[in-house]
Image (tube, rainbow over all chains, first blue to last red; front, side, top):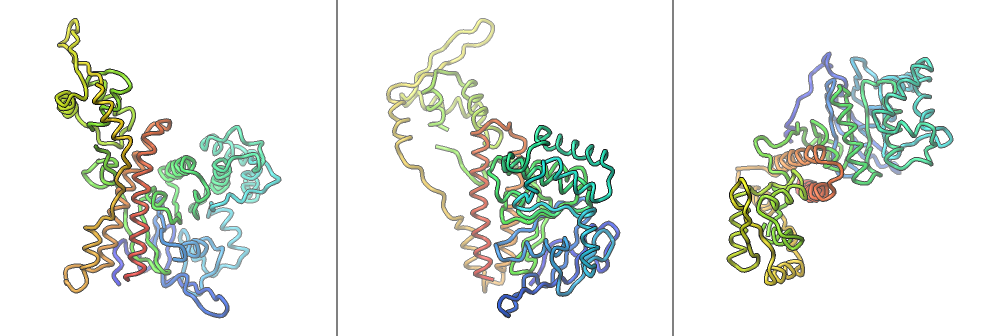
Length: 258
Length: 168
């Protein structure tokens, strides 16, 4: 099958944030092997915003977990910011995840008995950032995300959209080179979805590299590049932009007339 | 646009330019706006059909403006419009015809067709995301319009996925 779209360099190029070669992951359910990720090659350059789309069961989340070291590949190579990481032991991955890779999931997974501020400052402190600086970064992010008045709230006192913003602040507080997002708007209503996507775009415009997994094309279209995953394989890889020369608004899709 | 203008005039009498502004404010940037000429032509037809009635109002330093109000016949036409259920969307059968008939023609293959169509939809979706981001946050009507277009596209994309799963 032809695989149109950007090709992957033979060796990790210096401007690649992520470089993946021939990645394979096989799940074994009741002894029956099923290929979750089949021979995936992928390169994400610094500053790119890439969405991975596909039906459920296509291997999107598995791929993202492999990229963030939450799961281990059966074979293949993963290079993160110029370093090969697929064979690293868990202890090294834990450090990487603290400093170089930020995660946002569908559910915010905040620590319930800590304030929103502590949920964000703690990972900064764990990464060795001095307390005053950790607080300054947290305050800056909260202001950016419009939740500066929520610092003292516990997660239970926050609405879903606010919790997801806190999770985004937590993912970004250590200024990771790569932000990985797995259905980050999956449990939000349309309005909060729009706000969270707008925030992701804003961080991207400032140079944040993002890989986002979603089944939702509305979410995927926020990215500059969309990869379609089918049955563990990349079926298409394409840059997206507004259709050239046409600005018909909704007219290409809906017709309001009578 | 005919019935949209009638609906606006059912609220209060207005002249052509006011109607143009009301359409723009209601639907936002996503809706391709009719130009003022189209609005005047439509108003002329509505008046000929007795659905609205115009009256010239003189202005001190400018040409007269024509202010329209809805007639009883116009209200009946409007009520009839609201009373009718609206036609639902149809499958994009031109694309489906290509997909169904591609094999064996030597002219196209299905995966390439699906990929091309997906890229096209994603690009439109991207344009809609940008419109949504640029639209006034509080214009609920405009956002609902954009969201409607996005949900239709999402359904088209889901259906493409199904085609790919079944036909590949």
